Length: 83
Image 1 (tube, rainbow, N blue to C red):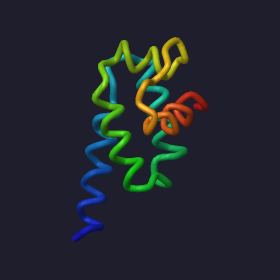
Image 2 (image 1 turned 90 degrees about the vertical axis):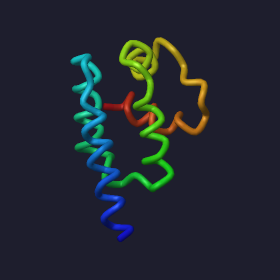
Image 3 (image 1 turned 120 degrees about the vertical axis):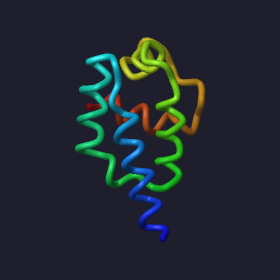
Image 4 (image 1 turned 180 degrees about the vertical axis):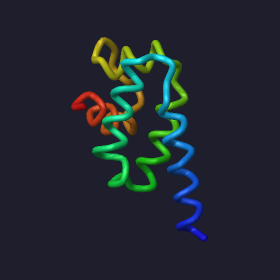
């Protein structure tokens, strides 16, 4: 049952990572291909919260123009900045 729940969560996060801003779409696509499967459950929950940001604010954070104020999201932000 837990494996099914994890697969469902990952599917939802993959879908939510599809953004309206091309730059974010590209960054998240690369992130999903490279790092997504290695994320721990806590990191998946953090990713869900990161995806709650609207596109302009999220792009400002990912591109480094703004800093993320939520410390538990900083690891994911760094991974996204490396793609």
